[in-house]
Length: 260
Ligand code: ADP
Ligand code: MG
Image 1 (tube, helix red, strand yellow):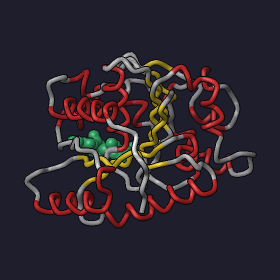
Image 2 (tube, rainbow, N blue to C red):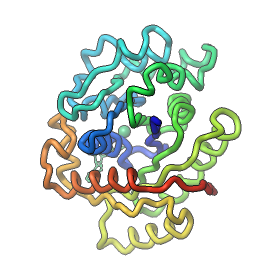
Image 3 (cartoon, rainbow, N blue to C red):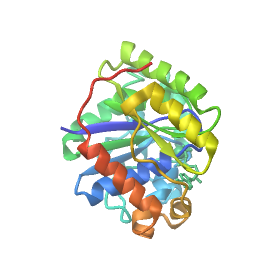
């Protein structure tokens, strides 16, 4: 069965895209068939996978508007060996254009349906907002992966996200659960990070991944080469951390959800 996961957090800069790209590369390295969907008009996951966003003939934008089937917009990342449904700034207009279309919340889900069984994992990189694009991501997904930095306001923002997940579950996608919370850019020497991390575990229990992603220069550099960290420097702490995350996901038993 295909597992569809949305990387979501309305805060920008918490590691959604870094997680989507590097998890896609890591799952591919463990022989899973992966599709990465870039749902952010910034197109960072597209570029980070080595695909030039400025020269796309077809993108996720056309797919959401029903202008072409997903297979016509899909590309393969030569760098990461996984498939990508790419995005660029054209997608910024989709929000407004989608509003008047039927099934506006489930257009990504409907577009994915015919090709779903070609993949073991579909990873959706959501934009930093709780908007209609993110709602499309949440409707298409079975579960949400929440990357977060362990800093002072992190927990506050989390309650809005959990609230949105709950609403989507009530009205649009009854199977949606929280897959896990991922601590990113973690500095173990920071007392604050330790405290926030402890609160997180207290509140969300084993929904918090045991794997922690450290702050690592290779993870920050890799996008400028259009490569996942695994392809840039296999021995880097960042690449190893995302391989460990993939391992933890694959070995995790399916558990009951408790959100909020
Ligand atoms: P988001 O998609 O949530 O906006 P990104 O994944 O784009 O966040 O990350 C924001 C910035 O932080 C990017 O410049 C990225 O390269 C960098 N970054 C992300 N994770 C790490 C990490 N573990 N170590 C170092 N830099 C990171
Ligand atoms: Mg991003």
